[in-house]
Image 1 (cartoon, rainbow over the protein chains, first blue to last red):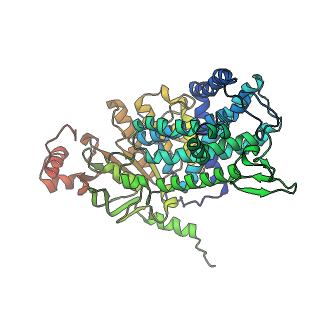
Image 2: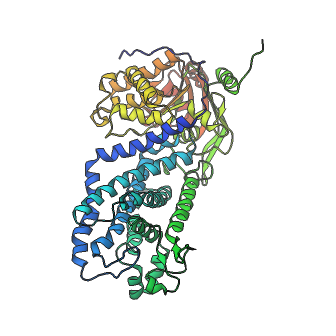
Image 3: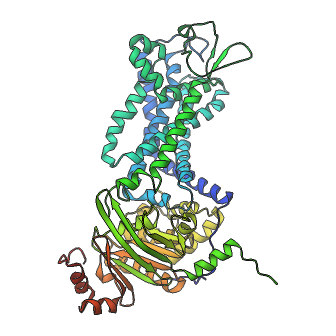
Length: 320
Length: 264
């Protein structure tokens, strides 16, 4: 085959230092690829939407009478079970999307595609964070599509809720994505991923406030209540729930009992000028967990300290 | 008149003087298993160097260390003079890699795959467009830029991976078993492109393979076996050192293996 290879001066090359523009180009490229791949894989897009919609249309409709909820913050009146479950289903989208991206990272590691990312001349923490944000961007697209369909199903938060929920989606998505990233570094083989479904996704989802309020869980099982309280996913769902109504957390009257307030009173509370206490527990837990999970994931992918280096093999596997 | 020597010009000067790749006394273990044992080799600029070894010789592990997938704990690895541990950014900027397994997104087009790679090197879109067109011309696929990867044959996909590895204009190109699974025509095409790059652009190339017929008489050869380097030098030197008539026999006598199916 004849190919025309242009001449080039080798000596002319000097190492370039990356400026902010280069970091920006790299970040945009990684996020753009994640979004593009998602949009091209239409089956993935629809299957990601069908899951929460099935829960909304079938499960919630069926359980509406059985699981009726009381008035708890941020709701100011009785709400239909569909309305209550919506933030939980948003959490489900974020959770499944994070795990899907973790699955694809394990797959990428086995096939070698992850290496193209890891050999890029940028700090590994920056590359992993960019990939994480790319995954979150995809999840946010799914959530807004879900919210449009939920709107047509008469689940209508205040108009500003569509804007105020965005930071909560980004934060929660980052936390779950960081957890998934950490797991992708720990899972050695793709086959082990089925275990993740059984041991991580389902327990996280069901032992949380996604489907039923915490006070109801406490009535049924105090132990499950304690587990749910310490489940980071609970806090992600609650953060989204409040953000959909333009709030960060519950405003608690200090004279009320925790049961009356519908919240726990041993969280992170700050006094407001009105005399009420603002519950920042959900925000603090989500931010803290994000930092912890991300730090651990960066450590695991660190070329000198990481678990991949110790465990052996470029794909965490064989040495060829 | 005084000349001000900036860090960049000093770096450029040191790059100009350095080999494309120097691996010096690198050992590596996975648990109790010693996979690399004091490996030393170099790749000169403008040289096509073949890293010949059976499957499991340690070639991929060596590549993983050079690409800094994980750090070398002993010895040193320099790419155009830049230590990959101490100056990873400068070193990786000068490195182009074609991995053994396919690493393109099959749902994206050729151009989109190249844009992604350009972004990973901090190259902006406008510049990436020019470079992608140039690189695809180099590998003879300019007319298929907007097709999806899944429509390409194995050999064409390999050529895209080579184009991708050239986008950031590296000084060293690593190819790990780049022709595995390709038919004879595609193998020749890939080899001819890479040899052209060495000849015309002065790249240093490290070509890892277990296929002896990919070695040309003018190539430098590094024989690797069970994590150790057994020979480094020219093809005639290899024949002379082993007293054999051809590279296949020389490789067998050197490694003490009769497994001709592996080193075909």
